Image 1 (tube, rainbow, N blue to C red):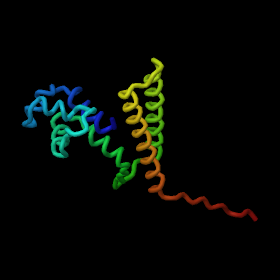
Image 2: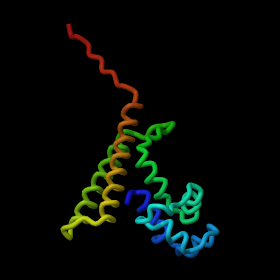
Image 3: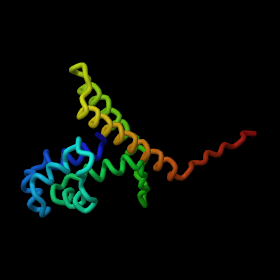
Image 4: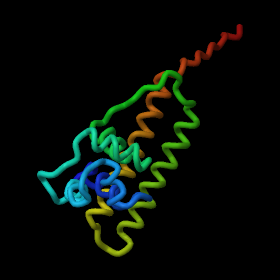
Amino acid sequence: MDQLDQATHDIVHKSELTAKQIADRLGMSHQTLINKANPNSEFHKLTVREAYSIQLLTGNHSLAVAMKTMLDVYVCEDKPASIIECALNATKENGDVVAAVQAALADGHLTEREKSELLREISEAIASLETLRGSVLAAAPVLYITRNKG
């Protein structure tokens, strides 16, 4: 089970809409949606348009986030965020990773769901560091000029 499978399952089963309501709005049977959201199914998967529609319908964009993470895409904004903001966000994301590790290992074993959550948190931390890198690269260099005394 990868991040896409977990994200698909979570969108269908952890949404404010029931799986039946989602299926009805997508124009598919409830059982078909359940089959496509089953992370253990190797053959029944959402189409790209179905995945797009579910994310719009539920307001949960975790499939897009999982795809971005898995593709390791770095999007450069027109105006980079400040280095301080990026550094603070990276620190926060790293703290989230540590908290997730502690929560996942509290009972002494790591489930597939916990593993998926950890990988998501780690990916978010990596993305925040990449944003920090981009902000540093985009920053104008500061020149310090010293004068000789004498």
